[in-house]
Image (cartoon, one colour):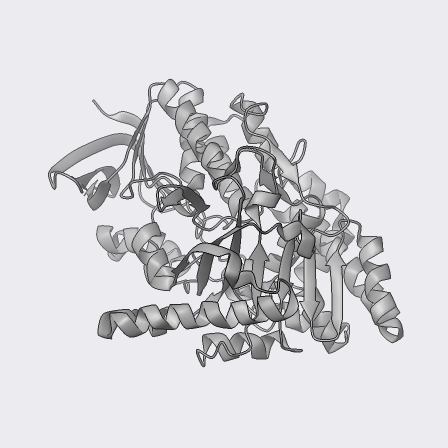
Amino acid sequence: MATDYLIVGSGLSALTFGALMAHSGKTVQILEAHEHPGGFGHTFTMAKKYKFNAQFHYVWDCGEDQTVNRVLKKLGLEQEVTFERYDPKGFDHMRMPDYAVDIPSDPEELIQRLSALFPAASDRLRQFVNAVEKTGHGLKKLSPPINPMELLKHPIEVISTVQYLNSTLQDVFDKFQLPQAAQTLLALQWPDFLLPPNQLSFYAWVVLFRGYQAGAYYPTQHFEHVINSLVKVIESNGGKVLLNYEVTSFKVIDRTVMGVQAMNLISHETHEFIGDTVICNIDPKKAAKMIGESQFSKTVRRKLDYEYSVSNYMAYCVVKDLDLRDYGFGKWNLFHTGHQNLNEAFAQMYDRYDYSNPSFAITTPTLLTEASQDSPEDCQIVEFLTVANYDYFKKLEKSDRKTYNHRKQEILDSILDVVEAKYVPNFRKHMVFHITGSPTTNERFCWCPNGNSYGSSLTPRNMGLGRLNHETSLNHFYFCNASSGYPGFAPTIWTGALLYQRLSGDVILGGGQS
Protein backbone atom coordinates (compact mmCIF):
# COMPACT_ATOMS: atom_id res chain seq x y z
CA MET A 1 0.00 0.00 0.00
CA ALA A 2 1.30 3.45 -0.91
CA THR A 3 2.16 5.87 1.86
CA ASP A 4 0.63 9.34 1.64
CA TYR A 5 4.05 11.03 1.59
CA LEU A 6 7.24 9.24 0.63
CA ILE A 7 10.17 11.49 1.55
CA VAL A 8 13.64 10.97 0.11
CA GLY A 9 16.26 12.27 2.55
CA SER A 10 15.97 13.29 6.20
CA GLY A 11 17.41 16.80 6.28
CA LEU A 12 15.76 19.34 8.53
CA SER A 13 13.26 20.58 5.94
CA ALA A 14 12.18 16.97 5.26
CA LEU A 15 11.85 16.15 8.96
CA THR A 16 9.82 19.33 9.50
CA PHE A 17 7.50 18.54 6.59
CA GLY A 18 7.23 14.89 7.64
CA ALA A 19 6.51 15.71 11.29
CA LEU A 20 3.80 18.22 10.35
CA MET A 21 2.14 15.79 7.93
CA ALA A 22 2.35 12.85 10.36
CA HIS A 23 0.95 15.04 13.14
CA SER A 24 -1.97 15.99 10.87
CA GLY A 25 -2.84 12.31 10.37
CA LYS A 26 -1.11 11.53 7.07
CA THR A 27 1.08 8.45 6.59
CA VAL A 28 4.75 9.34 6.16
CA GLN A 29 7.82 7.31 5.23
CA ILE A 30 11.34 8.76 5.09
CA LEU A 31 14.34 7.11 3.42
CA GLU A 32 17.81 8.22 4.54
CA ALA A 33 21.14 6.96 3.21
CA HIS A 34 23.07 8.02 6.32
CA GLU A 35 23.10 6.11 9.62
CA HIS A 36 21.83 9.29 11.33
CA PRO A 37 18.81 11.46 10.43
CA GLY A 38 19.08 15.23 10.20
CA GLY A 39 21.39 16.01 7.28
CA PHE A 40 23.79 18.77 8.34
CA GLY A 41 21.87 18.86 11.63
CA HIS A 42 22.95 15.38 12.70
CA THR A 43 25.12 14.69 15.73
CA PHE A 44 28.01 12.23 15.73
CA THR A 45 30.07 10.68 18.52
CA MET A 46 33.86 10.33 18.51
CA ALA A 47 36.13 8.32 20.83
CA LYS A 48 32.91 6.92 22.35
CA LYS A 49 32.43 10.00 24.51
CA TYR A 50 32.60 13.27 22.57
CA LYS A 51 29.54 14.51 20.69
CA PHE A 52 29.65 17.06 17.90
CA ASN A 53 27.06 18.54 15.59
CA ALA A 54 27.90 18.21 11.89
CA GLN A 55 27.45 21.86 10.90
CA PHE A 56 25.03 23.92 12.96
CA HIS A 57 26.57 26.40 15.38
CA TYR A 58 23.98 29.01 16.25
CA VAL A 59 20.52 29.66 14.90
CA TRP A 60 17.89 32.38 14.62
CA ASP A 61 14.12 32.85 14.16
CA CYS A 62 13.48 30.78 17.33
CA GLY A 63 11.81 33.47 19.47
CA GLU A 64 8.15 33.67 20.44
CA ASP A 65 5.89 33.62 17.35
CA GLN A 66 8.88 33.32 14.99
CA THR A 67 9.11 30.51 12.40
CA VAL A 68 10.69 27.79 14.55
CA ASN A 69 8.44 28.56 17.51
CA ARG A 70 5.31 28.40 15.31
CA VAL A 71 6.28 24.98 13.96
CA LEU A 72 7.13 23.63 17.42
CA LYS A 73 3.80 24.88 18.78
CA LYS A 74 1.95 23.17 15.95
CA LEU A 75 3.72 19.91 16.86
CA GLY A 76 3.20 20.36 20.60
CA LEU A 77 6.97 20.57 21.12
CA GLU A 78 7.40 24.17 22.31
CA GLN A 79 7.93 23.06 25.95
CA GLU A 80 10.09 20.09 24.95
CA VAL A 81 12.40 21.83 22.47
CA THR A 82 13.66 25.11 23.88
CA PHE A 83 16.51 27.48 23.04
CA GLU A 84 19.07 29.56 24.94
CA ARG A 85 19.66 33.07 23.67
CA TYR A 86 23.15 34.39 22.98
CA ASP A 87 24.18 37.60 24.70
CA PRO A 88 22.07 40.37 23.05
CA LYS A 89 24.78 42.91 23.99
CA GLY A 90 27.22 41.07 21.75
CA PHE A 91 26.29 37.79 20.07
CA ASP A 92 29.15 37.98 17.54
CA HIS A 93 32.56 39.25 18.65
CA MET A 94 34.44 40.63 15.64
CA ARG A 95 38.25 40.81 15.86
CA MET A 96 40.73 42.15 13.30
CA PRO A 97 44.05 44.04 13.35
CA ASP A 98 43.60 47.36 15.26
CA TYR A 99 39.80 47.02 15.58
CA ALA A 100 37.24 45.06 17.58
CA VAL A 101 33.48 45.30 17.95
CA ASP A 102 30.80 43.15 19.54
CA ILE A 103 27.62 43.06 17.43
CA PRO A 104 24.57 43.94 19.59
CA SER A 105 20.93 43.14 18.94
CA ASP A 106 19.94 46.81 18.98
CA PRO A 107 20.62 48.54 15.61
CA GLU A 108 21.02 51.95 17.30
CA GLU A 109 23.65 50.53 19.64
CA LEU A 110 25.45 49.06 16.62
CA ILE A 111 25.53 52.51 14.99
CA GLN A 112 26.95 54.02 18.21
CA ARG A 113 29.68 51.39 18.53
CA LEU A 114 30.76 51.70 14.90
CA SER A 115 30.60 55.50 15.03
CA ALA A 116 32.92 55.50 18.06
CA LEU A 117 35.46 53.57 15.99
CA PHE A 118 34.92 55.57 12.78
CA PRO A 119 33.68 59.05 13.80
CA ALA A 120 34.28 60.57 10.36
CA ALA A 121 31.95 58.00 8.80
CA SER A 122 29.19 58.22 11.42
CA ASP A 123 26.50 59.53 9.05
CA ARG A 124 27.30 56.97 6.37
CA LEU A 125 27.25 54.15 8.90
CA ARG A 126 23.82 55.28 10.10
CA GLN A 127 22.53 55.42 6.52
CA PHE A 128 23.87 51.93 5.86
CA VAL A 129 22.29 50.40 8.99
CA ASN A 130 18.99 52.15 8.19
CA ALA A 131 19.12 50.69 4.65
CA VAL A 132 19.70 47.25 6.15
CA GLU A 133 16.66 47.67 8.41
CA LYS A 134 14.44 48.88 5.57
CA THR A 135 15.60 46.07 3.26
CA GLY A 136 14.96 43.50 5.98
CA HIS A 137 11.39 44.70 6.43
CA GLY A 138 10.86 44.68 2.66
CA LEU A 139 12.23 41.14 2.31
CA LYS A 140 9.72 39.92 4.90
CA LYS A 141 6.91 41.33 2.81
CA LEU A 142 8.32 39.74 -0.35
CA SER A 143 8.92 36.27 1.06
CA PRO A 144 6.42 33.48 0.31
CA PRO A 145 3.59 33.16 1.02
CA ILE A 146 3.23 36.72 -0.26
CA ASN A 147 0.33 38.76 1.09
CA PRO A 148 -0.55 41.34 -1.64
CA MET A 149 -2.21 43.62 0.92
CA GLU A 150 1.06 43.81 2.87
CA LEU A 151 2.89 44.91 -0.30
CA LEU A 152 0.33 47.66 -0.91
CA LYS A 153 0.61 48.84 2.68
CA HIS A 154 4.41 49.13 2.57
CA PRO A 155 5.32 50.36 -0.94
CA ILE A 156 8.41 52.36 0.11
CA GLU A 157 10.02 49.40 1.91
CA VAL A 158 9.25 47.08 -1.00
CA ILE A 159 10.57 49.48 -3.67
CA SER A 160 13.74 50.25 -1.69
CA THR A 161 14.31 46.50 -1.26
CA VAL A 162 13.89 45.63 -4.94
CA GLN A 163 16.68 48.06 -5.91
CA TYR A 164 19.19 45.66 -4.28
CA LEU A 165 17.99 42.56 -6.16
CA ASN A 166 21.28 42.06 -7.99
CA SER A 167 23.57 43.65 -5.39
CA THR A 168 26.39 42.04 -3.49
CA LEU A 169 27.18 43.14 0.04
CA GLN A 170 30.27 44.85 -1.40
CA ASP A 171 28.09 46.85 -3.81
CA VAL A 172 26.15 48.28 -0.88
CA PHE A 173 29.29 48.93 1.18
CA ASP A 174 30.58 50.90 -1.80
CA LYS A 175 27.31 52.78 -2.25
CA PHE A 176 27.54 54.12 1.30
CA GLN A 177 31.34 54.53 1.07
CA LEU A 178 32.04 52.77 4.35
CA PRO A 179 35.65 52.67 5.61
CA GLN A 180 37.41 49.41 4.77
CA ALA A 181 37.81 48.38 8.42
CA ALA A 182 34.10 49.04 9.09
CA GLN A 183 33.21 46.83 6.11
CA THR A 184 35.37 44.05 7.51
CA LEU A 185 33.85 44.26 11.00
CA LEU A 186 30.31 44.19 9.59
CA ALA A 187 31.00 41.27 7.25
CA LEU A 188 33.26 39.29 9.58
CA GLN A 189 30.66 36.58 10.14
CA TRP A 190 31.38 35.60 6.51
CA PRO A 191 31.94 31.92 7.56
CA ASP A 192 28.15 31.83 8.10
CA PHE A 193 27.86 32.17 4.30
CA LEU A 194 31.31 30.98 3.13
CA LEU A 195 31.39 33.91 0.71
CA PRO A 196 33.25 37.24 0.82
CA PRO A 197 31.42 40.59 0.46
CA ASN A 198 32.18 40.89 -3.29
CA GLN A 199 30.31 37.61 -4.01
CA LEU A 200 27.66 37.45 -1.29
CA SER A 201 24.08 38.48 -2.03
CA PHE A 202 23.14 41.57 -0.03
CA TYR A 203 19.73 39.96 0.54
CA ALA A 204 21.30 36.85 2.07
CA TRP A 205 23.48 38.96 4.36
CA VAL A 206 20.57 41.16 5.48
CA VAL A 207 18.29 38.22 6.30
CA LEU A 208 20.89 36.46 8.42
CA PHE A 209 22.41 39.54 10.06
CA ARG A 210 19.02 40.90 11.09
CA GLY A 211 17.84 37.40 12.01
CA TYR A 212 20.63 37.08 14.54
CA GLN A 213 20.03 40.62 15.80
CA ALA A 214 16.43 39.63 16.54
CA GLY A 215 17.84 36.70 18.54
CA ALA A 216 20.77 34.32 18.16
CA TYR A 217 20.05 30.98 19.81
CA TYR A 218 21.40 27.54 20.70
CA PRO A 219 19.18 24.53 21.58
CA THR A 220 18.94 23.97 25.35
CA GLN A 221 19.50 20.23 24.89
CA HIS A 222 21.73 20.53 21.80
CA PHE A 223 20.83 19.87 18.16
CA GLU A 224 20.57 16.10 18.58
CA HIS A 225 17.48 16.65 20.73
CA VAL A 226 15.84 18.83 18.06
CA ILE A 227 16.34 16.16 15.39
CA ASN A 228 15.26 13.31 17.68
CA SER A 229 12.12 15.21 18.70
CA LEU A 230 11.01 15.61 15.07
CA VAL A 231 11.71 11.93 14.38
CA LYS A 232 9.70 11.00 17.48
CA VAL A 233 6.67 12.97 16.21
CA ILE A 234 6.83 11.09 12.92
CA GLU A 235 7.22 7.66 14.51
CA SER A 236 4.67 8.22 17.29
CA ASN A 237 2.11 9.06 14.60
CA GLY A 238 2.72 5.82 12.70
CA GLY A 239 5.39 7.15 10.33
CA LYS A 240 8.74 5.54 9.57
CA VAL A 241 12.27 6.91 9.29
CA LEU A 242 14.36 4.23 7.56
CA LEU A 243 18.12 4.76 7.84
CA ASN A 244 20.85 3.30 5.61
CA TYR A 245 18.56 3.31 2.55
CA GLU A 246 20.12 4.91 -0.52
CA VAL A 247 17.72 5.81 -3.33
CA THR A 248 19.09 4.41 -6.60
CA SER A 249 16.28 5.40 -9.00
CA PHE A 250 12.91 7.08 -9.26
CA LYS A 251 9.87 5.35 -10.78
CA VAL A 252 8.30 7.78 -13.25
CA ILE A 253 5.26 7.04 -15.47
CA ASP A 254 3.71 9.69 -17.71
CA ARG A 255 5.54 12.52 -15.95
CA THR A 256 4.24 11.28 -12.61
CA VAL A 257 6.67 10.16 -9.88
CA MET A 258 5.22 7.00 -8.35
CA GLY A 259 8.01 6.01 -5.99
CA VAL A 260 11.66 4.98 -5.75
CA GLN A 261 14.00 2.04 -5.64
CA ALA A 262 16.40 2.09 -2.71
CA MET A 263 19.23 -0.13 -1.58
CA ASN A 264 19.70 -1.12 2.02
CA LEU A 265 23.36 -0.21 2.57
CA ILE A 266 23.76 -2.87 5.25
CA SER A 267 22.15 -5.89 3.52
CA HIS A 268 22.70 -4.54 -0.05
CA GLU A 269 19.16 -5.63 -0.92
CA THR A 270 17.07 -3.41 -3.20
CA HIS A 271 13.51 -2.49 -2.25
CA GLU A 272 10.74 -0.55 -3.96
CA PHE A 273 8.82 2.16 -2.11
CA ILE A 274 5.72 3.90 -3.45
CA GLY A 275 3.94 7.04 -2.33
CA ASP A 276 0.92 9.06 -3.40
CA THR A 277 3.23 12.09 -3.26
CA VAL A 278 7.03 11.99 -3.33
CA ILE A 279 9.00 14.71 -1.54
CA CYS A 280 12.62 15.14 -2.63
CA ASN A 281 14.99 16.29 0.10
CA ILE A 282 18.14 15.20 -1.76
CA ASP A 283 19.97 17.70 -3.97
CA PRO A 284 17.50 18.73 -6.73
CA LYS A 285 20.19 18.71 -9.42
CA LYS A 286 21.22 15.18 -8.48
CA ALA A 287 17.58 14.03 -8.41
CA ALA A 288 16.91 15.62 -11.82
CA LYS A 289 19.85 13.73 -13.32
CA MET A 290 18.57 10.45 -11.85
CA ILE A 291 15.09 11.04 -13.27
CA GLY A 292 16.28 12.51 -16.59
CA GLU A 293 16.48 16.27 -17.02
CA SER A 294 14.36 16.14 -20.19
CA GLN A 295 11.37 15.10 -18.05
CA PHE A 296 11.32 18.57 -16.46
CA SER A 297 9.93 21.76 -17.97
CA LYS A 298 12.28 24.37 -19.46
CA THR A 299 11.49 26.72 -16.59
CA VAL A 300 12.49 24.17 -13.96
CA ARG A 301 15.58 23.13 -15.94
CA ARG A 302 16.66 26.76 -16.02
CA LYS A 303 16.20 27.04 -12.24
CA LEU A 304 18.15 23.82 -11.74
CA ASP A 305 21.15 25.45 -13.39
CA TYR A 306 22.51 26.79 -10.10
CA GLU A 307 26.08 26.82 -8.83
CA TYR A 308 26.79 24.87 -5.68
CA SER A 309 27.89 26.80 -2.64
CA VAL A 310 31.52 26.57 -1.71
CA SER A 311 32.58 24.27 1.08
CA ASN A 312 34.23 24.51 4.44
CA TYR A 313 36.91 23.23 6.76
CA MET A 314 35.94 22.26 10.31
CA ALA A 315 38.02 21.39 13.35
CA TYR A 316 36.29 19.87 16.37
CA CYS A 317 38.41 20.14 19.53
CA VAL A 318 38.02 19.13 23.18
CA VAL A 319 39.98 20.89 25.92
CA LYS A 320 40.40 19.78 29.53
CA ASP A 321 41.27 21.72 32.71
CA LEU A 322 40.61 24.97 30.89
CA ASP A 323 37.66 27.30 31.34
CA LEU A 324 37.30 29.30 28.16
CA ARG A 325 35.20 31.90 30.02
CA ASP A 326 38.46 33.05 31.62
CA TYR A 327 39.70 33.97 28.13
CA GLY A 328 36.79 36.04 26.86
CA PHE A 329 34.49 33.30 25.56
CA GLY A 330 30.87 32.84 26.54
CA LYS A 331 27.38 33.10 25.02
CA TRP A 332 28.72 34.42 21.73
CA ASN A 333 30.87 33.46 18.75
CA LEU A 334 34.24 34.94 17.94
CA PHE A 335 35.24 35.81 14.37
CA HIS A 336 38.88 36.52 13.61
CA THR A 337 40.72 37.83 10.57
CA GLY A 338 44.31 38.87 10.11
CA HIS A 339 43.35 40.79 6.96
CA GLN A 340 41.95 44.28 6.57
CA ASN A 341 40.08 43.11 3.44
CA LEU A 342 37.87 40.00 3.58
CA ASN A 343 37.74 39.65 -0.20
CA GLU A 344 41.50 39.19 -0.16
CA ALA A 345 41.35 36.92 2.92
CA PHE A 346 38.86 34.66 1.15
CA ALA A 347 40.87 34.54 -2.09
CA GLN A 348 44.05 33.66 -0.21
CA MET A 349 42.44 30.61 1.40
CA TYR A 350 39.95 29.50 -1.26
CA ASP A 351 41.78 30.30 -4.49
CA ARG A 352 45.41 29.98 -3.37
CA TYR A 353 45.00 27.36 -0.59
CA ASP A 354 47.14 29.56 1.64
CA TYR A 355 46.17 29.51 5.34
CA SER A 356 49.26 31.29 6.66
CA ASN A 357 47.07 34.21 7.80
CA PRO A 358 43.71 32.51 8.39
CA SER A 359 40.28 34.08 8.85
CA PHE A 360 37.94 31.85 10.84
CA ALA A 361 35.10 31.49 13.33
CA ILE A 362 35.31 30.07 16.86
CA THR A 363 32.26 28.64 18.58
CA THR A 364 32.04 27.09 22.06
CA PRO A 365 28.91 24.89 22.31
CA THR A 366 29.49 23.83 25.92
CA LEU A 367 29.28 27.46 27.13
CA LEU A 368 25.89 28.04 25.53
CA THR A 369 23.67 25.85 27.69
CA GLU A 370 23.62 24.43 31.21
CA ALA A 371 22.04 21.17 30.02
CA SER A 372 23.99 17.90 30.11
CA GLN A 373 27.05 18.58 28.04
CA ASP A 374 28.19 16.95 24.82
CA SER A 375 31.48 16.13 26.51
CA PRO A 376 32.68 14.43 29.70
CA GLU A 377 33.11 16.35 32.93
CA ASP A 378 35.80 19.05 33.08
CA CYS A 379 35.96 19.28 29.27
CA GLN A 380 34.79 21.99 26.90
CA ILE A 381 34.23 21.78 23.17
CA VAL A 382 35.70 24.34 20.79
CA GLU A 383 34.98 24.34 17.07
CA PHE A 384 36.79 26.23 14.32
CA LEU A 385 35.32 26.96 10.90
CA THR A 386 36.71 28.44 7.71
CA VAL A 387 36.39 28.10 3.94
CA ALA A 388 37.97 25.35 1.85
CA ASN A 389 38.19 24.49 -1.84
CA TYR A 390 36.49 21.21 -2.74
CA ASP A 391 38.47 20.58 -5.94
CA TYR A 392 41.76 21.06 -4.11
CA PHE A 393 40.90 18.65 -1.28
CA LYS A 394 39.26 16.09 -3.57
CA LYS A 395 42.38 15.94 -5.71
CA LEU A 396 44.59 15.57 -2.64
CA GLU A 397 42.40 12.86 -1.12
CA LYS A 398 42.43 10.84 -4.34
CA SER A 399 46.12 11.20 -5.13
CA ASP A 400 47.83 11.22 -1.74
CA ARG A 401 45.89 10.43 1.42
CA LYS A 402 48.90 11.11 3.65
CA THR A 403 49.36 14.62 2.21
CA TYR A 404 45.60 15.19 2.46
CA ASN A 405 45.65 14.41 6.21
CA HIS A 406 48.81 16.44 6.69
CA ARG A 407 47.22 19.44 4.95
CA LYS A 408 44.19 19.31 7.22
CA GLN A 409 46.47 19.30 10.26
CA GLU A 410 48.52 22.19 8.85
CA ILE A 411 45.39 24.34 8.60
CA LEU A 412 44.46 23.54 12.20
CA ASP A 413 47.99 24.41 13.31
CA SER A 414 47.77 27.79 11.53
CA ILE A 415 44.50 28.50 13.33
CA LEU A 416 45.87 27.35 16.70
CA ASP A 417 48.94 29.55 16.27
CA VAL A 418 46.58 32.53 16.08
CA VAL A 419 44.46 31.27 18.99
CA GLU A 420 47.52 30.91 21.24
CA ALA A 421 48.97 34.27 20.19
CA LYS A 422 45.72 36.27 20.46
CA TYR A 423 43.21 34.48 22.68
CA VAL A 424 44.18 31.40 24.73
CA PRO A 425 47.89 30.91 25.53
CA ASN A 426 48.91 27.23 25.71
CA PHE A 427 45.63 26.10 24.12
CA ARG A 428 47.34 23.02 22.66
CA LYS A 429 48.47 21.82 26.11
CA HIS A 430 44.84 21.49 27.15
CA MET A 431 43.63 19.80 23.94
CA VAL A 432 42.72 16.16 24.64
CA PHE A 433 40.97 15.39 21.36
CA HIS A 434 40.58 16.88 17.90
CA ILE A 435 39.27 15.83 14.52
CA THR A 436 39.19 17.79 11.28
CA GLY A 437 36.81 17.75 8.35
CA SER A 438 37.28 18.96 4.79
CA PRO A 439 34.88 19.41 1.85
CA THR A 440 35.24 15.71 1.01
CA THR A 441 34.11 14.92 4.57
CA ASN A 442 30.92 16.90 3.86
CA GLU A 443 30.42 14.94 0.67
CA ARG A 444 30.99 11.59 2.33
CA PHE A 445 28.93 12.06 5.48
CA CYS A 446 26.25 14.56 4.42
CA TRP A 447 25.80 13.35 0.82
CA CYS A 448 26.17 16.87 -0.58
CA PRO A 449 27.56 17.19 -4.13
CA ASN A 450 30.96 18.93 -4.28
CA GLY A 451 30.91 19.07 -0.48
CA ASN A 452 28.63 22.12 -0.69
CA SER A 453 27.56 23.57 2.65
CA TYR A 454 24.45 25.48 1.59
CA GLY A 455 23.06 23.86 -1.55
CA SER A 456 23.13 26.59 -4.15
CA SER A 457 25.59 29.44 -3.68
CA LEU A 458 24.30 32.55 -1.90
CA THR A 459 25.21 34.92 -4.73
CA PRO A 460 22.76 37.49 -6.20
CA ARG A 461 22.24 35.24 -9.24
CA ASN A 462 21.01 32.36 -7.07
CA MET A 463 19.06 34.53 -4.62
CA GLY A 464 16.91 36.34 -7.19
CA LEU A 465 13.42 35.82 -8.55
CA GLY A 466 14.51 32.81 -10.63
CA ARG A 467 15.48 30.77 -7.55
CA LEU A 468 14.27 27.17 -7.47
CA ASN A 469 11.26 26.46 -5.26
CA HIS A 470 9.06 23.44 -4.47
CA GLU A 471 7.79 23.21 -8.06
CA THR A 472 9.22 20.38 -10.19
CA SER A 473 6.74 20.33 -13.16
CA LEU A 474 6.27 16.57 -12.52
CA ASN A 475 3.07 15.25 -10.97
CA HIS A 476 3.02 14.38 -7.26
CA PHE A 477 6.69 15.33 -6.89
CA TYR A 478 8.08 18.29 -4.92
CA PHE A 479 11.53 19.58 -4.00
CA CYS A 480 12.09 20.31 -0.31
CA ASN A 481 15.71 21.19 0.40
CA ALA A 482 18.14 24.06 0.96
CA SER A 483 18.48 24.71 -2.78
CA SER A 484 14.72 24.83 -3.33
CA GLY A 485 14.12 26.93 -0.23
CA TYR A 486 16.88 28.47 1.84
CA PRO A 487 19.80 27.01 3.82
CA GLY A 488 20.35 27.09 7.55
CA PHE A 489 18.36 25.89 10.57
CA ALA A 490 15.40 28.28 10.58
CA PRO A 491 15.22 28.65 6.77
CA THR A 492 15.09 24.87 6.22
CA ILE A 493 12.38 24.54 8.89
CA TRP A 494 10.55 27.35 7.07
CA THR A 495 11.02 25.50 3.74
CA GLY A 496 9.46 22.31 5.12
CA ALA A 497 6.64 24.19 6.84
CA LEU A 498 5.89 26.22 3.71
CA LEU A 499 5.48 23.04 1.62
CA TYR A 500 3.28 21.51 4.33
CA GLN A 501 1.18 24.67 4.37
CA ARG A 502 0.81 24.60 0.61
CA LEU A 503 -0.15 20.91 0.34
CA SER A 504 -2.37 20.77 3.43
CA GLY A 505 -3.96 24.22 3.37
CA ASP A 506 -3.17 24.50 7.09
CA VAL A 507 -1.68 27.96 7.61
CA ILE A 508 1.22 28.09 10.07
CA LEU A 509 3.46 30.81 8.70
CA GLY A 510 0.98 33.39 7.49
CA GLY A 511 1.56 35.95 4.74
CA GLY A 512 4.57 38.24 4.72
CA GLN A 513 6.47 36.18 7.29
CA SER A 514 10.10 35.27 6.79
